Image 1 (cartoon, rainbow, N blue to C red):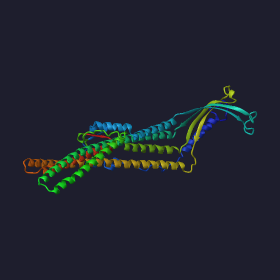
Image 2 (image 1 turned 120 degrees about the vertical axis):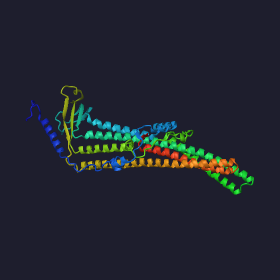
Image 3 (image 1 turned 45 degrees about the horizontal axis):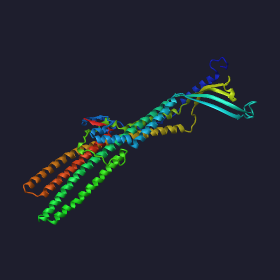
Image 4 (image 1 turned 60 degrees about the vertical axis):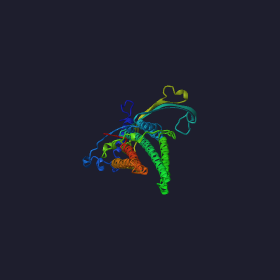
Length: 484
């Protein structure tokens, strides 16, 4: 069709449409066959979770209940306050929150590509026009002012899903950053909880050590009096004196451990050396939590680090789609409208208007294999993310299984320890009765008391290990409360 002023579709537009159709046709020739992620995410059945064998195992007597403040279930107000202070003040959490904000900002940047881009510009220039260029006289060789006021607009047609995939990838990174922040909170809360339980354990051992020291001092005084009466030998006195330095040294080591535990809590809560006056409660007042008898699969879904790894895999898959879209044409619609003139005063006169509109097409034809290499790299990143996720799930299952095993073993040990404590208390009662009847010495009573103190020390250690394992189990299950 020849060009004319009355043509409904001018020739340049026909040519533009033909170019777009040609670009789309060439885009269909994009070849990225054989390039893609190879790794596969681990299924629960591969870990023995959700398989028939697992279903035949004893069913857990507890259910997973998501709890953002799982530490409150231990029933200690001071622990609750310490965890809240840590979550508010610790720099690591603020770093994680800043990373979330950065990921969200990146998402906003990517999302802006789906909207038209409009900009404006105003230029005023005084210049000399070349006498040997395209400009005719009187411009040639003269000095004139030029003015330009223009609005530019552009829009990229996302025909092959590149922008959508980029946005999905950015959103996946936001989810991963949010899960990382939750993981940091979970780790910090666990550290505070375990440090607090350590302090309770040390305080209980300090009280027991004071009782042991007082008992040994009583025994030494008794041996001294018996030696003065000719009823004991100097060897017996030396044996009694030899035990006191060891007990005092142990008591001093406990004071050191208590100070270090306070320092650790102070650092975790963001107030260095600010907890020296903290008066924690008693170890026996902490409410123990129920533990399952097997590894429930639904608990692992609550772990934020597992969720972050999965989000990164999903983001990586979207990045693969972005890399594939690079093989296709990039089609934009560009337009401008404004005023242009020679001489500043002429810009507002009639006839200074200018405008333009048309497609802009970019199509890779020969790039030396760059796009295929880029796609291979994205696919390899996904494989790394998938295997990282698989390793994390395996570790998560192991961590939960380890803590369940530990809690079950501690429960059995506690039963035996309670039996030992009962036997020691019985022997102490017998020794006290024999001493009251004049059939035994005070030394036998004190030795029986030492056996009771040793059993009580084991009880403290087992109780502290139980609480520590429960805190680790809660962390391993993503902070899930194990409710009956």
